[in-house]
Image (cartoon, rainbow, N blue to C red; front, side, top):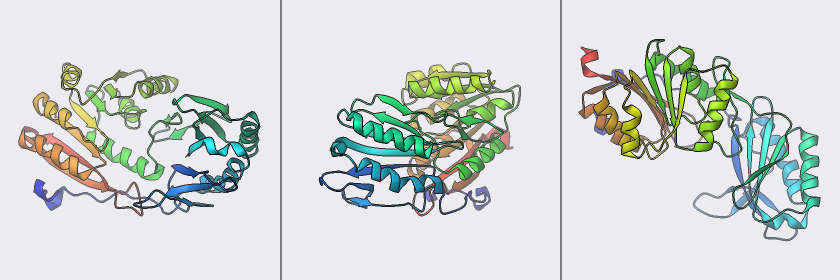
Amino acid sequence: MRQLNMHAEVWQPPLSGARPAYRRKARFAIDARHPHTLKMGFREKAGNAVIDIQHCPILQTKLSALIAPLKKVLASHDNKRVLGHVSVLAGDNVEQVTVKHTQSLAKAYTDMMLDFAQQYRVNVFLEDAKGHITPLHLQAPLKCHTVDGYYLMPGPNDFVQVNPVVNQKMIHQALAWLSPQPHERIADWFCGLGNFTLPIAKSGAEVQAVEGVAQMVQRAKENALAQGITNIDYLHLDLSDEKQVYEALAAGFDKVLIDPSREGALTVCHALAKAKPNTIVYVSCNPSTFSRDARVLLEQGYKMKKAGVIEMFPYTQHMEMMALFTRQENNE
């Protein structure tokens, strides 16, 4: 951030949450090469070996408690060599397990997994080598609540913020900085399932929500309608494509929120600098690409009014941040 010459008064208090046991999502690697044992856990730092675990202190307690019994089931059959990895997700109402497999699973194996699902009251999905996902047991539709009573319903491979407490604080801060009003047109780009979109729409603003994964766009639209939200226009677009970005901006917006992946939003920021919305809130998971993109906005007449870091991943060096940009003429 040093190259942006950010003034001290710009910085806001950091957002953080409780620790440990904060994380609601994880993916476990599997090593089933030995005929009599199965390792399930995380890969070692700077290596490929699987570190076998019985519990995980950074996972939510209800997920950590599933590790040992789940591993026992997965290790209990000769068919275990076809396992790829295992993903777990804790909703607010149910936990979910997704088992990746490279070949068809024997019925005896899926029967044992079904018994596990029923005993522990969890959703279990099976994902084959082509990425096709089949539900084995659905205890309940999984819901992840955000703010203002809204919730997301992620599929097994959908992105959802892993730290629910900090996510709620992040949404509240973004809304305070964006300050959506009923008469405004607001864009929420890289919107995912609607983490920011739904509470923005509550203001009564006309919202355009853009996401690059078609299945997530459809699920986000269905999720919004199920909660009675109709003032969102969902679009499936590639926001790294200059033509699609400019077409999406053609109608004009008062305010824009962007929450890109680690690659950042360079094409979008160049387009926003020309479109000149009054307010831009940028949520970043990569300080390097944020600095690059922010420089584009600053050089084209925007001023960074606020910025703050977000501790979404305690115990790591990973840092997220949020910044508020406004047009220079609005600051005079």
